[in-house]
Length: 132
View 1 (tube, rainbow, N blue to C red):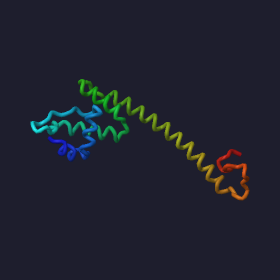
View 2: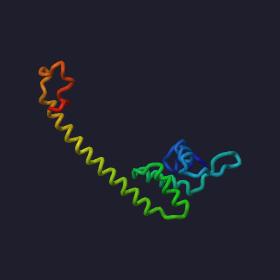
View 3: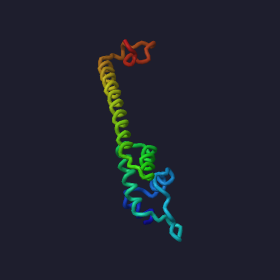
View 4: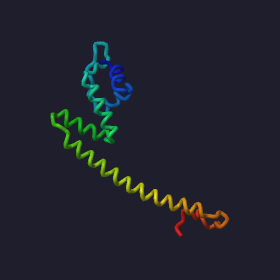
């Protein structure tokens, strides 16, 4: 199938497909006698996997690693499980950091609401952000 057909089938642009080829996620297909890319049917399955893996938060490098395992004949399930656990741990850490930031911002918002600008001195840059 030609690149336009593959793009339509996968809901991607032809530019994205070319990028995935350059990034090593999709093997360059053979060419027709006219020089057009001629993708095999399994390219659509591979593109769907790439899209799903990106939706799950995997990076292109991680996806490349999963595909390399599969291409070598190895089932990547354990590797994918490890990647998912790493991403979950990262998300949990970021959520904890965001909760701390939310608390700090709420405190600053209260301080801002209670601040009378007429009490600020020229020496103050901003009394809201300066710790008491």
